[in-house]
Image 1 (spheres, rainbow, N blue to C red):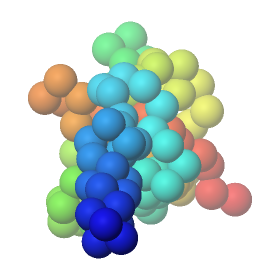
Image 2: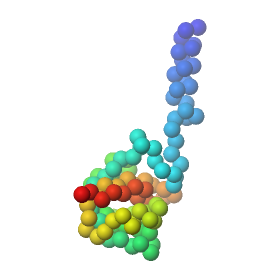
Image 3: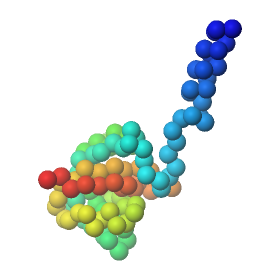
Length: 106
């Protein structure tokens, strides 16, 4: 009986119903936020896009490079200027690489 209770408890604790899930477009949980170093190369506020030269993006298993990201929400672009160092979080949302959080590094 003790073994079956232990097994039940383990199954319940690891079930997808109890795992924290992240819906595309919703803010990531604090544990899921992995910040990456980058430098702003270009800002296209009209298109809601930003070009960053960045280090490896661990949560996307992506090496360091320069690339264009969408910004979600686009108002994130109001926080940055060309040439500044930033820390950012990126996710793949609906097939597009998207910056969901960004902060200027002093």
